[in-house]
Length: 211
Image: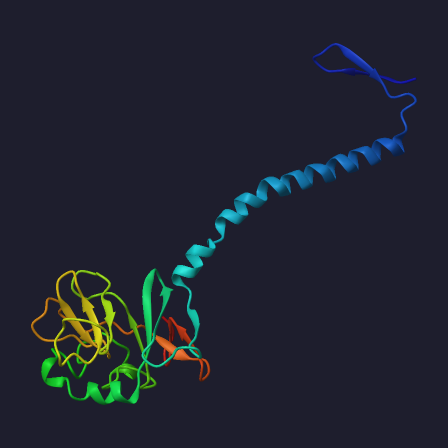
């Protein structure tokens, strides 16, 4: 029998009769359990370093299916915490836009409120689909969408568009601001691109990559 004295404690223990193979197995198993335990402790920390789904959604591009939008209908999605409006305009809407220039503050969209590919009379890549950020350029309110055929008191010459009831700003169906209202500029057109005839990606510029 062999006896080993424990330093500093005045105790002794014996190794006689101990199955070395079993001891090795026990040590190995304990080490594995310890490693797994460390893994469970470390995972919440590692996970906390990854952006949350909400954070990813706030900055990531948003893919939108526009195949089911009917004429005159507005679809709203969220990108970077902002409402994005997608309106399907009819041929009449597009024709009406050409008659409004004299009433608008910036009819030719000279202010840089849109990407270069949307600096046209329709302020869009494809004329029938308007894509704008639904936030008034005055104090950040969200205007109402008012169609020409809706019941309203905006005048008999109202051709449809957006009205901000907070301070009385008007925008046409291209998001262009009317003269004599508090809003100083047109609604902002976000970067976007077409993935197909029926799907767009908001947040990715058509010519310059991800915004």
